[in-house]
Image (cartoon, rainbow, N blue to C red; front, side, top):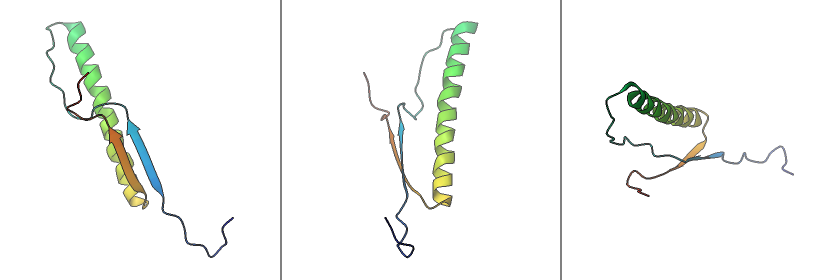
Length: 77
């Protein structure tokens, strides 16, 4: 148990994003289904990237150490 005069512990945040965050080139066939699938995939990806920016900004405002792990752009299965 900590006393009332104890110094606050530094806050740390660890984020693991199980996805790439960099743009990926891809060939999309002409057609409503292919274009829609690619568009939705892109939207979902960049909403996640936007969330990371918001979390990072809030961590800095609140004085929290921000740590992020993502899949590198050059990773290939």
